[in-house]
Image (tube, rainbow, N blue to C red; front, side, top):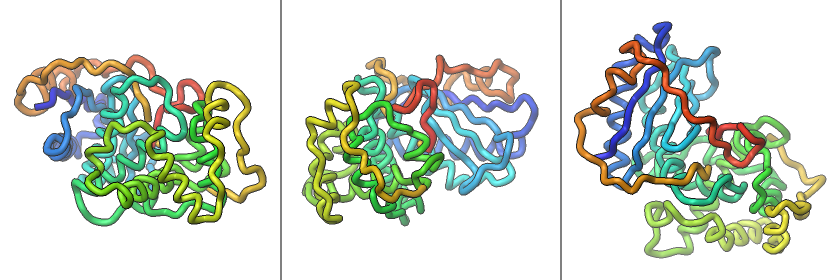
Length: 294
């Protein structure tokens, strides 16, 4: 059983009305994930949004070693949306515990694709709208050109804060994992959970071929990742418009605890304990200090 702790930042009572449902939903999400994977230790921090959030009314991110942060709009809280969001973030936790440092664009795309496929496999139903979105013309080629880059703009690719249509990274990731699985009998999202991003390059080349695009030279992409000039970035292509986390999974065998952990009453905001502060945001390959949003 995974050791995890829930921290509700509720000093101003913004979450009071939904706290019981948040607790129950978080426990349910962890139980669902544990039925398929071994989760690392983690802390879950939940806070109320200062301004209403679009779409499902919540956003999640992994901000540090074993730290998931969720910001939500209390008046629009949907348990199903939180459950799906947490399942996605648990994939980022798992992939983040591998050595590797700041991820490349390819790693971020693959992680988002695996997160989407895992949540869909566990919960069933249709893919999230952003995952099912077909990326704009030119964006797939750009992703291939910048695959190994670590200085890509994460917000542009995954949050639509720039030229890219919102959800471009998620859409490419979902298609990429589906394409890989279609040509890999015997594999599934669980066997791919910790696979390196480069193992999905053949699937990326097949996607490019379906659009009549020649795949870029991998050597050029690797050189750009090392700090050289990026490969052809498809200048002039029409494009419109949230992971490797820290190293160091402890390797300790989790002990069994009841509920969310022995210290939850102290750690939770509703008990008056101090709000936890992660040891700095974990970047996702964009500018230093930018957390990963999905």
